[in-house]
Image (tube, rainbow, N blue to C red; front, side, top):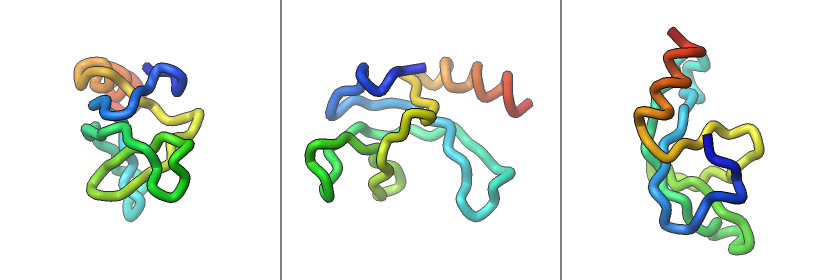
Length: 76
């Protein structure tokens, strides 16, 4: 799992994403690290054409396999 300090603008990452409409449904999704348009001093995740502020407890990974391993450990 990546630390926030390791993230760079333009980086492709994978996250475990919880569906906001169905909290019991989670998937692994690819996202891009970008500058937050509302606060250019912060990085955000670009996911589904939406900007998500990066939080300390976000599970961010460099590869799908790494995300899948943790996903299976906790959700399966």
